Length: 201
Image (cartoon, rainbow, N blue to C red; front, side, top):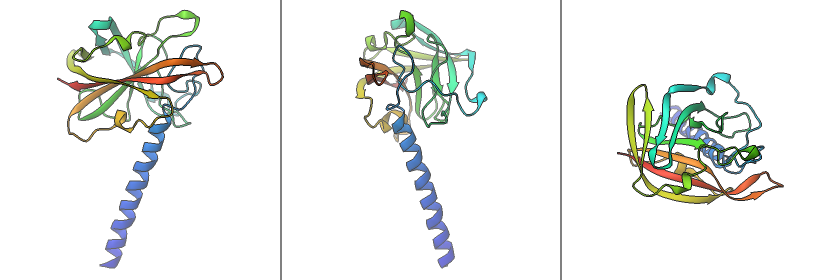
């Protein structure tokens, strides 16, 4: 009996250790610097460890009519330094494909750039104009999933963000992330992160 108990304890410890490591990686997303002249919310100078982790699909789109967004959704995972990937294009958004897919149970996360070098417009330049109750649509191969804005919150770049990437209410959520705040020339990033929390309708 004792060996079985020990085995269960070892398994539980390994599971908890893995979860803690994952949480640490998530918390690092908002603390990395950007190499763009504009403010991407995480570091953008390293490639993903696997090329197939990031690609775009013209049939996978984010649509927000209230702020005139109709953007291709790229797929991104973790970069070698533990940060979340970002869209390759300023006009695209990026879904964190290690988390749940938009519309599935849990908190799906989509990131987009705010501002871009040489004053080029970026997809989430007007994300701050969203209001509670606005609808957001994710279209995938002709199937549309609707989300409704529940709240908006600004985090400092070093603040813990576990609630952005996880939920325990058994429902489907979609959270949108971008930069905001003051540009720091030395750190090459903005001071804050804007998160829009939405719920599946």
